Image: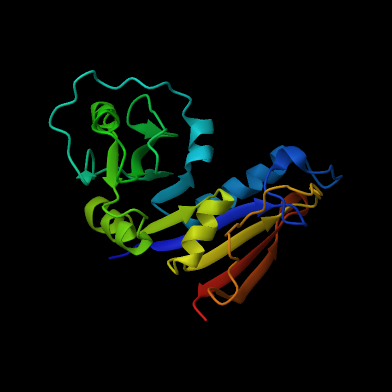
Length: 231
């Protein structure tokens, strides 16, 4: 069964994505706002989270260490562990991420890879105990990947935490069930600042949002919840 998918993001009032750029507020600090985000994340009680390559690279700063002569490489699926209580899913089409062991933040790693990733990289991931899914098409088929995550790993609820392009691609694919956005009492104001969602052609005609709830949290943060559906 396909997991339930929630996109969870924190932004400024003008939609900025990176707290390092946010203006200050007497209501709280960037650390306070991040703590509110973590509380909301924990309250969702999902058993998996997903981020894009750039975000995961900030969490796993490891150099390549693949074997010289890879053998017995499995495609398109390598399941290293199914009994983990929670999973960290990374979207990495070009195979640029590397890991030290099979966990990030205590969660078992599953990497989503493009079809042209070399066997040497797959062998490296397998040797580190990391699970992976290799796309059999030129583009990821989001619904099919989610089906595999649910069937092979027992993922029931997946929280997507960016970046903006990842959020946009999944929303455009029609696989997102819920959008939660925490708004910090701050502005970004950068003319080219990355927003919480980005998609080349825009999402008009592809996504419909239905308001569910608005809740004031501590330190001036407000969380908005929307049901996501197709028009």
